[in-house]
Length: 231
Image 1 (tube, rainbow, N blue to C red):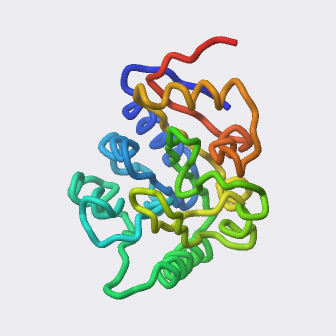
Image 2 (cartoon, rainbow, N blue to C red; image 1 turned 45 degrees about the vertical axis):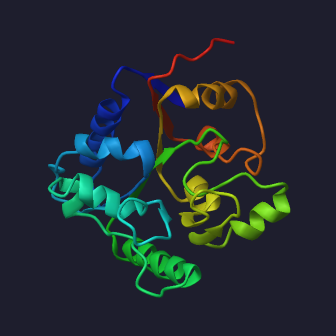
């Protein structure tokens, strides 16, 4: 995994992601992340190649509130950005259950994959202080982890009691590890210092610390403004 430390990791990541898209001869589906990682969106210009680029959220909050749903936050903050103009939003329909919402978004993802020409899949991931990434949260054991994130699914409903927003949906670990061609991780802020250094210096199982996926992926880059403690 390549690590980039800079004063403006959002800008550096946006530029690198854009180069990845432009350098690819074919269609691209780019999954974005909410929270602080939305900052990257303003550094992604309109792609200069002739191929199709589609942006979606890699994980979503099951909410129709514009200050909670990741898609609505992106469209509110960056309505005129090239990303917004090529964006498939993931907003629950009125009275749509979490399960039905996840199935609908999964079908949208699979349709994009099916209809693409020479597809490249990129996913932008954040990392939480508890080691979660996307909507993939630590679980007590491998069995409960696979029950929540089965290997034969692309995108799943995620309901976990105790979270501030306890109902979400997410790409699965299997999809990110085995189908995504490129992972970009965005980790900034003092509250992420401990988890980033722990991730880089220690090893855990994915069910214990889902951000391990970023280390395990064969083509991942991490962007941060955090000073990494040398071993």
